[in-house]
Length: 244
Picture (cartoon, helix red, strand yellow):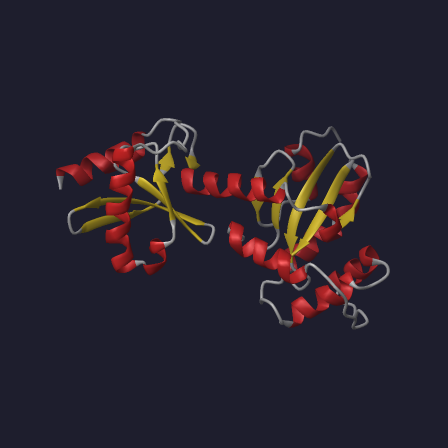
């Protein structure tokens, strides 16, 4: 009980140390002990990435883009979030955002539908769904963003999954000769002529699942900052540091 109390105290007082990618031999042994206990309740932990956290004895587990922190003592497991109260951040969310931004660096723009200037001041990458209300709201403000010099790069993320109506709509948009006009029409609720062709919709949907996209829109700034959910265009412009 005292160890758990000390652990909780450490969690609430943790300083801004970064997660280390170097695992010592002792830590490696401890990680396998943690994994053995976690597998009893969470079978996917058998293949999960488990690494040390900033708190001694606490380990970060990643499963399908989701993060949790585990402390194991005998037959007891403490599992949950880890917060840095100094910087007021959820360390798991911070790690997920960093991973998402890193993986998006490798996605070429020819797998996106892009609006805005060719030489933008800043750009954002947005996981979007045609039928998502807040995605439509954000798209209605795209003129404000592009006028401010922001390039908007859309990645398809049909929330209902592969084969859904939203997925089929996005494929039809992608296969249209004028993708931008077709996407704007679809987001306005207008029908788009059914079409099929080679497309990245399933690929980008699976990428979103892999990096932990939980809803749409999910907005990723060019500096790696992640903003889940709708953000008004005026606020986005301000957060990107662009003078109005």
